[in-house]
Image (cartoon, rainbow, N blue to C red; front, side, top):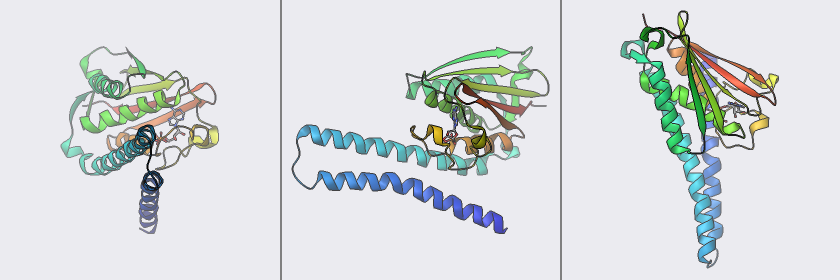
Length: 230
Ligand code: ADP
């Protein structure tokens, strides 16, 4: 109980900190902007920068909401049969629409029948899981490209998301699934450190898991394993 209470306290402290940072930047920028009259160009630049911080806040609020939803909607009683190739295609389409410069190839292997792709779950949460992994791959890799391999042999459906980005240092591998943890070699790229903890939580709620392999400097591969329906 003590541990759960501490974890929750830390979570709230971290979430508040993540929100306060862009809010402070926004009010700071507006304060400076209002000190005197500005040119149209100066107003535009400042407003664009404020807008960027607002987008970041919006993304953070979305992620926090998804974490809460995972706990309430990730219950077995509400699960239905879901085809994982459809989840992959729709997560991919959703992301490409928001970020047209991202690319993501999909290959489907070791699938003999529809049952090889079916899992019992919550489609919205599973889409969010895959979305987060493709988004990270494309966000961190300088070529903004991800590759997905979907495999259906054996008792589980496996979805591997790989990239040729900076990879993850060995000492960070054990921590990147913790809420709000961000590895140092990727700190130049924006993020809140929630995506992977959300992805892992969703995989676990479906009786599965996520493994990561990485060679620093060469890329990373995240493999999701979900038990097949039936
Ligand atoms: P965010 O990407 O918002 O920081 P995540 O929880 O999704 O949060 O990821 C946590 C950390 O794991 C990231 O900050 C980054 O350091 C590392 N990471 C995740 N995916 C990758 C990847 N594909 N390549 C390199 N590092 C990654």
